[in-house]
Length: 193
Figure 1 (cartoon, one colour):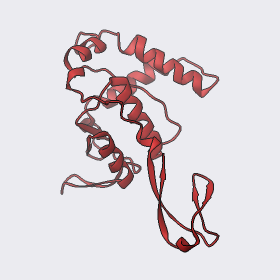
Figure 2: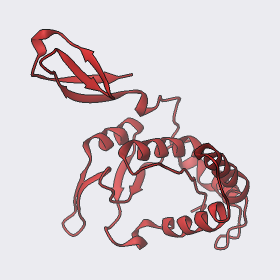
Figure 3: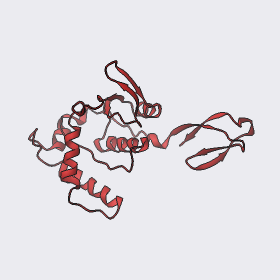
Figure 4: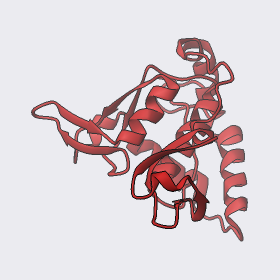
């Protein structure tokens, strides 16, 4: 409605990049919506058949959505018009936010995009609405978001299933951790906090 956007560049299309971006967006907007519409990226959606209504959300991404309290809806595959104004926003970011700029580091690009989002995208007079997106958001959308209530990042609390190796160890994020010998060759749940 407000046409207010949030821009974050990612290094990949891995699930953690999506989760980092979504958490940053929730912080940027100061709340969470009831529903998040996502593309059919393999990291998020395992299977989607819009004709039958069958939608299988990636198990870990579904846990992420439950953590934040929103439902997930996937747009129709190969139908960009089902994503609302997203596709036009991508073109706007490319033309106005990135084109003509050179960055020596990833951090420089991130800083530039934060500045551009805050000083240009939020404050421009939007061609369709005739209003500044930030003002329209504050007037009519911000109050519709549910409070974050200081909830910690989902990424600070992760859960994995790992099989215990013969040497009584499990591997988590490239590190090996020892577990009791009685658990050898069994699957265990690992929590990262």
